[in-house]
Amino acid sequence: MRTAVLRAGATVLTLATTLLSAAYVTAHLKNPAAPLQPAVVKASTGSAATGPGGVKLGPSVQPGNGQPVTSTYAS
Image (tube, rainbow, N blue to C red; front, side, top):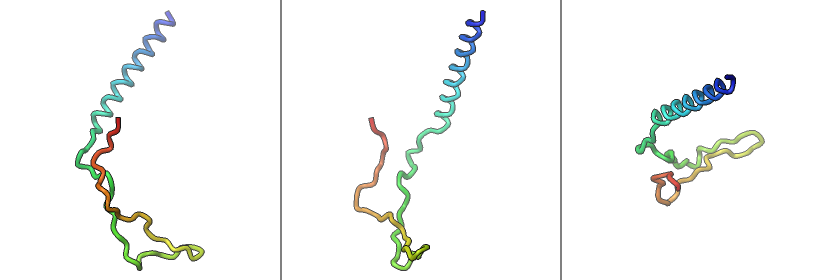
C-alpha cells in the first residue's frame, strides 16, 4: 500500500511540474523585435572620470563595423 502511495505522489508531482513548466514557457515567448545588443553611445574625450588612486574611468565598449546579430539560435 505504501509503495502505491509513493508512486502516485511521484506521478502527481511529475505531472504538476511538467504542466507548470509548460505554462511558464508559453507565457514567456521569444520577442523577435527585442534588440540583442544595447545601443552604444560613443563617449567624448571629456566624459572619463578619475577614480580612486588616479585611475581613469571611462566606457570600455566601443562601436564596431560588424554586422549586427539578428538571431541567437544555435543547433
